[in-house]
Structures are given as C-alpha cells and as structure tokens.
Length: 133
View 1 (cartoon, rainbow, N blue to C red):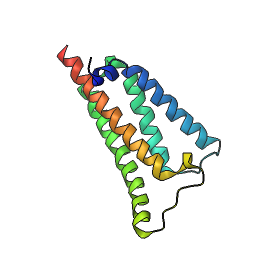
View 2: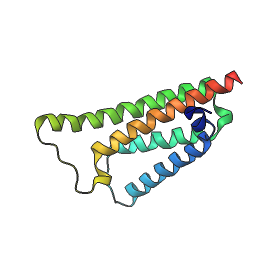
View 3: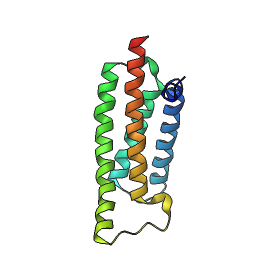
View 4: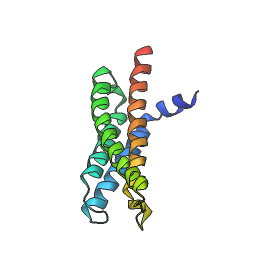
C-alpha cells in the first residue's frame, strides 16, 4: 500500500477530522476567542464542506470533484491572499507574529492552504481510484 493509498482508504476518517477542526474554529469565532475575520471564516467553511464531501465516499464522482475543485480553489485563493499579506509585511519590515501564535493569521492561513489543497487532491484521487475499480 502506497502512502497515498493509506490516506485514500481512510478518507472518511480524515473528512470527519476536518469537519471537527472546522467546527472547533467556528466555535472559537462564535465564543469570541478569535477576532472576526472574513478570510478565516471562508477558509474554515471550505475546510468543513470539503470534509463533509470526504466523509461520503459513495459521492466521489466527477460532479463532486468539480464542486470540490471550485469550492477548494476559492478557499485556497483566499488563504493564499491572506498569507501573501503577511509576506508583504515581511518585505516592508513591519511583520510581527501575534502574541498568541495559535491565532496568528499568517500561520493559520498557511495551514488552511495546505489543508484545502490536500482535501481537494484526496477527493480527486478518491474519485479517480473509484472509476478504476
């Protein structure tokens, strides 16, 4: 079993983990632990929606891949734009990490970018492997 097959065989579990992460992030937003950020809200919503799609392997087909790609690329674009704002501050010499690193937008947007791209890839590969079998 290749490393990709390891993750594909557990895609529903990974999807559930992503949904939990999304819900935890939303609960932090609703409880006021983190500040209101439209970039972050979109990213956590996309991670949750893609997580739901990952949980239902029977839905992994061309239409789901298309929907996941559109939603995922929108989320990835927003995450990349937010992360790029951090790089602009680095170039200007004004960048500072937040006191609480767990709410730093530069780090969180980078993590969201990695998560969203991984989710889209896994959904694409899952649908592809389903058509081969």
